Structure formats: C-alpha cells, structure tokens
Length: 373
Ligand SMILES: *Cc1c(COP(=O)(O)O)cnc(C)c1O
Image 1: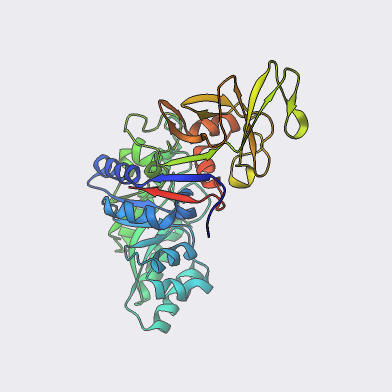
Image 2: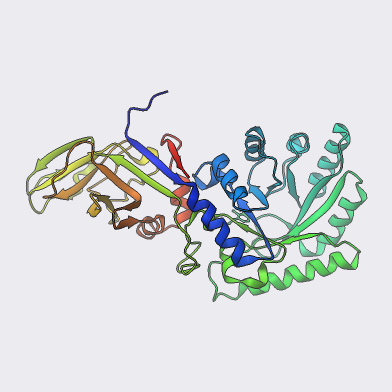
C-alpha cells in the first residue's frame, strides 16, 4: 500500500554493523549475541538480525517463541536463544523451528524433552538460567544442580549453556552486580560438583558487557548497545557507538499566530510573542509521548532546535518555530541528526523520566521503517 503520510523511521544498518563490530572487539574472545526482541527494540527484527550476523554476531536472542519463529520464517538459520522458558504448549514449535530455549522448571524441561521425542528429532540444546538476584525468571541457585541433572537424564536434551541476568549492571557503583557474579560462580560450582559443565556461560547485558569485564564469560547478550543507545548514563560513551534510528516527518501545515494565542488540547502552550507554528503529522499513536512537549523536548528543523508546542495529540503535534521561515514539506527530525544538530532517545528519556530503551521500543508499527546500508 502506498503511504501518503510523510512520517518515517530511518534505520542505518551500517550503524548496527559498526556497533556490533565495536562490541566484538571490546568483549573478545567472548562472543556477541545480538538481542533482537521486541522487533529489535523497534528497529525491525529481520534486517537488524541479518546486519548483526553479517558483522560477526554469533547468535540472536529473543523474548518470545513467536519472535524466533518470525526470524526462522525470514530464512535466518543462526542460533536463536529464547530468553525465558517457553510455556509447555510452545514446546513443539520450539523444537520444530530449532530455537534454543532457556529453561528453569521441571515442567518446562519435561515438555521440551517430550516434544523432541514426539518429533523424533536430534537432541535439543537448552540453556539453564540461574536467578542470582534479579528475581524475574530463573532457578534458585540451590535447585540448579538438580535441574541440570534432570536435563541430562533426558537423552532428548543437551545442556548447552548456563546463564543469569543482572539487575543493576547500569549502576556500576552499586555493588550488587559483584554479589550476583559470586552467586553465579557458586551455582556453576554446584553444577561442576555433579559433573555438569555447560559449554556456554553467559550473563552480561550491554551495561555489564561494557562495564564489568568479569561478566563477559563465553558470550555477552547485547541489545541496546547494538542500537547505539547507551544502557545508562555515561556507560560506553567512549566507545563510539552510533544511534541507528532516526524519526522524521514533514511539516503539513503552517500558520502565524499572535502573542497570547494558545495551542493544542488544554491550551497549555501560550505564545509570549508572535510566532509561526508548524503542524507535523506524528503523534502519541506513533510513540511520541503526549507530554513530550510539556516536558521540554525539542525537534530539529533546518538543523536547528525548536520546542514541541503544547500537548502532543494522537496523530499530530505542533512546533513553535518562532520567526524561522518554514514551508509545508520541510523535514522535521524528532530523533537523529539534522545538519549539525541531533536529538537522542536518551534526551527524550531524560525529559520523561524513563530510559532510551522505552523510547525506541515505543515507536509504533504505524510508522514505516526505511533501511539504509
Ligand atoms: C533484554 C535482555 C538482554 C539485553 O539487554 P540490553 O540491556 O538491551 O543489552 C540480555 N539478557 C536478557 C535476559 C534480556 O532480557
């Protein structure tokens, strides 16, 4: 279908490849798994996965079985780790598609083994997840050896990896990541004590991969860094990671208003002087938060910054361009570079009290993605 609304996301696959290469150099000899869950954090799972693999990523990580199936449907045959244990009713699909599940429950392990038997397939590799303190998913450290033995008793399964996940790797001074690393070491010793030595040990997300070299083990699971968004304030700022995503639209309507006029729902933005107000066809249904303007955010026009004026509506918003000459069709950049100016997801996040992750993941499916190599 043709698109008539001039609003789009640009994804720079060259930036994805560059970022993966930077991470591979940084963490080697550890391998890099590119995390492409949530449609590659809004960047598009298939093109990003392909670019990451081209750049040397060894594997992909997804949150959902459905996301793994989507990659397989696109012809991607690299290892794909499903980061949480699939529900038993997904076991047959996991086996059929050759996904690598994380496991941490008896029921989950047994369901996968049964699915392999049913399919009459070769043994399926699984990774055992240890909860070392994030307390989201994973087996308690004291249950890990028993679960590993359960996996090993099932000839249909192969214990390929052991992993954990950090809660505060983005706060290097916190001290808790070191505690989690100690608990992880204890859990791995309990495996070794029963003769289980998985080949792949992995723990680090982007923040840990950058900030905690001791957490890199055999592989890191990097998501946000491959998109060129920092995992936390200042983390990896010296690595030269490049933001891969730009969000742009074009001015659809222009008017001159007068001092004292107020604009948009709630009339919350009142002009202190005469000004030109440009309308841009993008709104909160596209992932531009309703209060972004009120929170102080700006957009780029002609390489210069101008405030987002008043409430962002569902499909449109307003820019106060002051006395700047502006015409219908002029490009407005919400995220990314325009001339020497740039706006980052981290900048929006700071205005809104969130993190860059939520910004890029929030850009809705209504906005078409365009890919540049
Ligand atoms: C999302 C996720 C990652 C990647 O985290 P980033 O901070 O984006 O690098 C790694 N591991 C697990 C288990 C995850 O859920």
